[in-house]
Image (cartoon, rainbow, N blue to C red):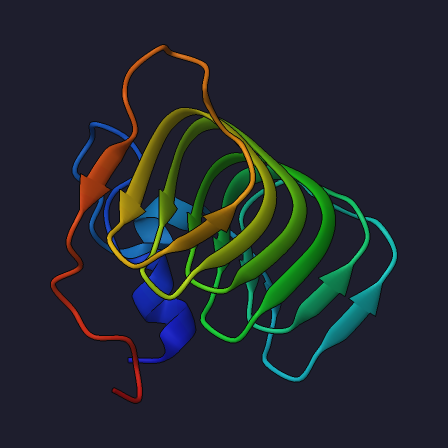
Length: 146
């Protein structure tokens, strides 16, 4: 399993059990693979799987998956997110964000629900809009390459 797929299958993003990646991502996810570099703003009507680098702002009208080794620099909005890579800036998630142990976030994280693995690095503000506490968990799977 690739790091991108592993990051995006950490857990379901809502209460419905949707374990298969394509069930969660919808019909046609956008994909920026490792080695891809995008400079500019991005909007996508559905899910986005990021394996490369983005420098700019974004609006993802679905699930955002930032894989191990990927980096987003800027401000990004998404419906839900799983982050195993790096974000420098602001991430605002309407529903749930899961932050893997390998993640490095430097900036503000805002979401209705935040689940963060032990070992994750967040250098900035965590804002939970539901008022619930941040959920801390231990990852059961080692990152790809470990």
